Length: 259
Image (cartoon, rainbow, N blue to C red; front, side, top):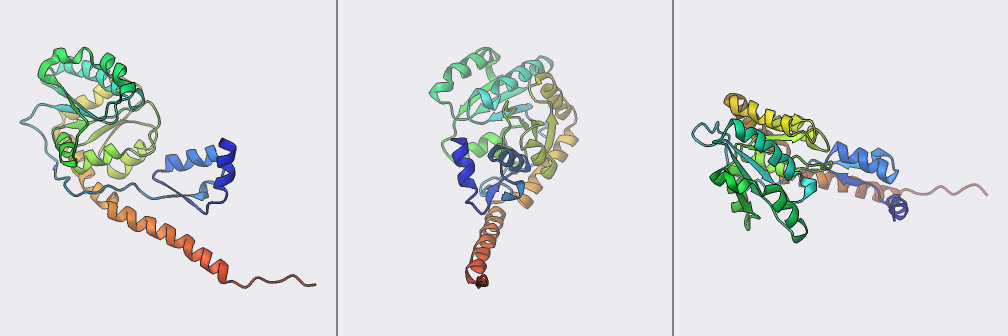
């Protein structure tokens, strides 16, 4: 139960989180001081992420969605926005990738049932079996959007897209505002607004230099702030801090009260 979790977390010296959003959320949820939570930026293994920023002048403008296929991740928001965008740009394409579980098959088929009529304008990649296949998916994109309905605490797909030189357009909630501010690799739009999402894509479609600028900034800053090595170093520092504090406490003589 929640009360049991709240009781047990009091015995923990500190908790690691990956975003300020989740730190504030969990502090309130578990009813503990926000200082109990320590932020370490999420890190990814950058090996093999060899996509590079490009203006894509010679390729169809391709919008990508990569996440587990379920309603919470917001595929329906992408499809609605793409229907708007595709009317103005019939040469544009939509690429969807991610694991599809049986519990979400009906949702997926209902959401995408009209897309096959677009022929080569729509492709479902499935769930990549290897890191190389996933990277190939990202490298095929002009922009990535995973407009979740829920408040995402991490946003790993944002970092992976930026690592391959692909800018992002995300809803302004959860951890996304922090990721966009730190990486300068994308745009934020109001949550649950397909028209706003389509308008943001339109901006990037029309302004190739701006799209390339976002891609370059995100590409560089993911490598600066979000590497697995940096996350490991900062995590180790966090653990060492509490180990040192425990050793100091153990070795500090305890004063006995006067009789």
